[in-house]
Amino acid sequence: MTLSEDILQTDDLHPIDIVENLAEFREWEFDRVADNQIAMAVEGQWRTYSITLAWSDADETLRLICTFDMVPPEDSLPLIYEALNLANDMCWSGAFSYWDEQKLMVWRYGLVLAGGQMAGPEQIDRMIETALGACERFYPAFQLVGWANTPPKEAMQVAIAEAYGRA
Image (spheres, rainbow, N blue to C red):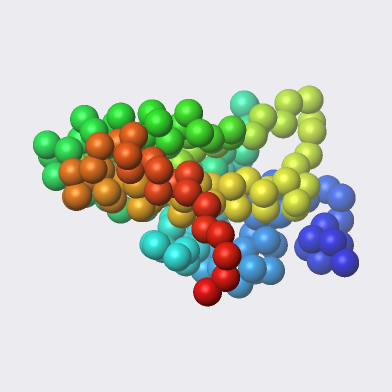
């Protein structure tokens, strides 16, 4: 049975309804903030990530923001920004930014659904999984840059290294 068959009961669901059904299906903690917005907490290997998806009728866009707390030493911020640029160069969809005022590392992605297009559960699930995957992949590199004074290019090797073999 596909994710669509498990989640969809009708073809005319609002994108945030689909996200809510996905959150229930995955047993994630969530809060339907408004008709057009949902917030979730998803446990990862490194952190618990806060994920918010919001639908804009005016822009016909489903926006995903995935955040985690990060309070690097002030003097490491230029290197953090360099690491963000390197990480973003390795990502096909979405991008990282750092919100200094809120002390949050942020992964953002907007899915444009112009002309009445509809996102399906698999597509929305992939958006969420891509965000979580990027955060999990680059979290150790950001930590190395912020607290271990590792040069960004060297720290990115952690994010691109593949584990081979079996434990």
